[in-house]
Image (cartoon, rainbow, N blue to C red; front, side, top):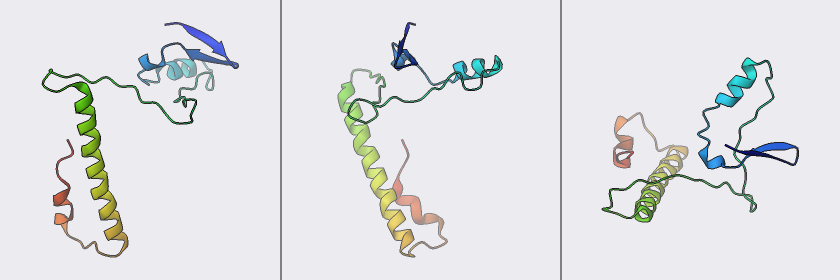
Length: 107
């Protein structure tokens, strides 16, 4: 890998290759430098975080379709959680194990 100094900080040229194993921080601590290395997400110029990930597909569906379906599924599940939180905060939750049966599978 290559690195460059930018604004008094060392930056990795290909941050997408970092798997956040934290091995670099552990090595620095082992050498007696507790605050030598800090690994954190870098914000994009517009202030948001970028998420870089790989999508593998068998070819039955294009990668873009897989991601869009995943996002849609996640939105539905988050909406269900939101509804349960609202219902719970309004005193509607009882000591009943069947309350989450309609959430569906996690995957």
